[in-house]
Image 1 (cartoon, rainbow, N blue to C red):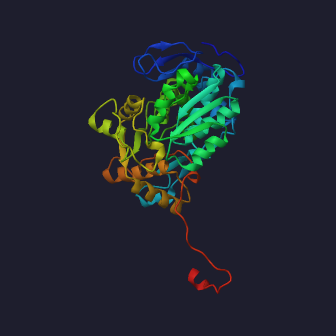
Image 2 (image 1 turned 120 degrees about the horizontal axis):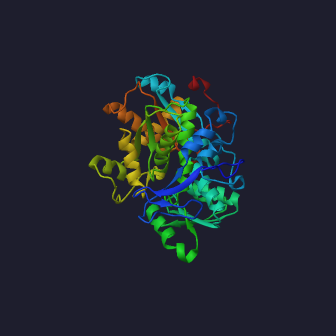
Image 3 (image 1 turned 180 degrees about the horizontal axis):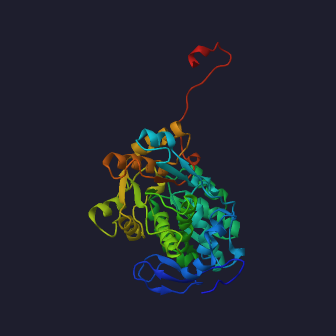
Length: 413
């Protein structure tokens, strides 16, 4: 298949059901497949590989939009951009060495540097761009915070209307961010799956399009760019292991897809990182399914964790997450909220990097996996920090000084 335009080439051939392999025509509005499972975008990788070389990427800017040949947008005017950047790899040098490794043993990919402060910018930028390209005008979704903020921002930029539902205990900063960036946002007395039911139930009457996690094909394509970017940053090699905070799991699925596509065009070899799905003990459906040898994860009852981004009681792409974890030789692991916030504080104080709670969960999981021998300190591990820690509540500070009273400066020594 030849690209549709010299300015913005696309190599999309079709979409297919991730469960049955049934083909669907590209260029049309799609939700889930007839089997009720996510659709995956497929490309003419032979043509892509023959027309794009690794060296072609070097002079490009634009963050994840620089991988345009790997993405489904066909017209440049439908690209919705807010100043995207390539997110940095930050080694936890002191902590890695203290844990028995070396200065580059454990590296954080800090997705908090993206627009709206989280990795949700990747998936929602693509979902919104394709919604614009396909003529949609009103989008709706459930969110624990960051996804809603990203969709509100990109949709407002694209001139699309958004309606967003979030659990009633979503932090105020997230709810206000969503509203200020142009969405109609509602607090709901339930969890994210309850919010998702409202979106699904309202499609016909309200006329909105459901952009819930994996219920449209293009958020995966945006999240896929994490894998493309990571490979490029590491010189077209891959780390030994990736720790990924897993709620809906779009990013883990997307990265696995990216690695398959890169191998198909000859840019990387067959080696894969072990993919580790990190969850909280209070909401660990993927961990339970992995340990039980199941392909699907049942609804997790009474889900609770302060790391709201991974408080997802049921994931429509559960089998895709579990397949990637198992095919890679990886594992799923749950950590306590206490371990999460302990990790967040230590990384901030020892390395100067403020992780979000979900990102801190990956460091807690890394330490736990070291202790059990599931990973070695000599291996290169990449941990995904999915959002800036600045968007989350922090411990209060109570120290004060009265400048009108004598100050004992010796106490500071």
